[in-house]
View 1 (cartoon, rainbow, N blue to C red):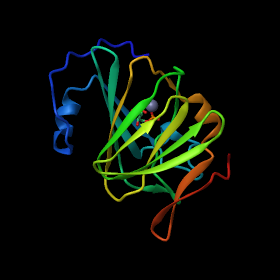
View 2 (cartoon, protein in one colour):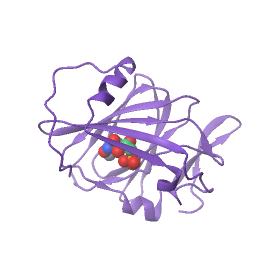
View 3 (cartoon, rainbow, N blue to C red):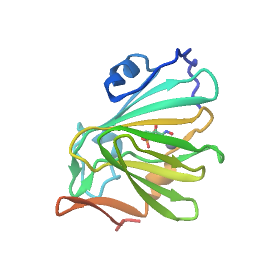
View 4 (cartoon, rainbow, N blue to C red):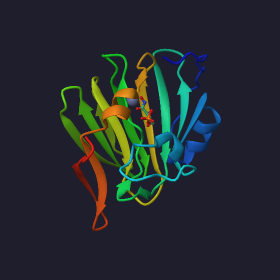
Length: 184
Ligand code: PAN
Ligand code: ZN
């Protein structure tokens, strides 16, 4: 659970042009570099490489927002991706909207079912409760994603860090391909 004081928000519109306004109003800034993601990729990752950043705004009531900005690139054959997590709260679902770029959302249920959805600019995804989720930048520019999630969602990173997802996303002939994770 976020322990920070909630923000008081005015009505606002969020387009890709407004990303800097979101950032300047954010309550929390997370930077994930290679050194924060050791063991997540099949290959070794450069320790100081910025893979993605998240800017969070804590809503005053029931929801928080996260704006994820993912750099394009690959570690070996694998596209840049987020750590991925389950929510701690069994009821916490989430909405994702793509503001720019091209990404893939990998979802995996506790039972091991796996789904992957491609997300282009202007498109959204619903992440049901109980499904772990990871974002992958499969394009060649920044992938910018808005997430809206319940304040009490909580983030369980340990399960994915220990076990990974059942699939990874790699480049094959210049295109993203979802393949079985050899380390799963
Ligand atoms: C997102 C994620 C964000 C970064 O806001 O937190 O994309 O991914 P990791 O948290 O897995 O590093 C979200 O799903 N919030 O619940
Ligand atoms: Zn989440």
